[in-house]
Image (tube, rainbow, N blue to C red; front, side, top):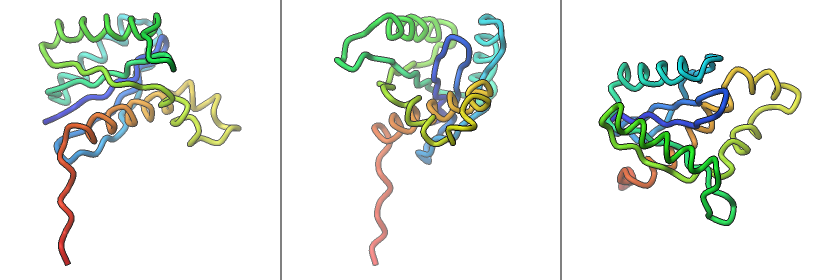
Length: 143
């Protein structure tokens, strides 16, 4: 199986890739200024990576309710399903951007944020969470 992880933002789309090995790795974020161009680029990545499933961050509120951003993600998932014919899984992404940002020195965050590195790190965390849930753990080697 081949998976694409997505951290959907209003200005950037963070991306990650994973397969049956169960390890998510970041891809370059989509940072096109035009939303339609970003969306077209996303569809290109999904096609070029021959993804079989898509994993999209679902930004639930801390009280488990779905606010406006979560509803946007749900609508985006439905759109992707229709355009690609692939399963699109929504995965709770609470605090993934915060966790991803905490790995960057505070003095470098502003420049790094615009590059999309934090967004792709967040997508990697989202995808890794999903892979950990659906793939069997590797069997421990016996001595």
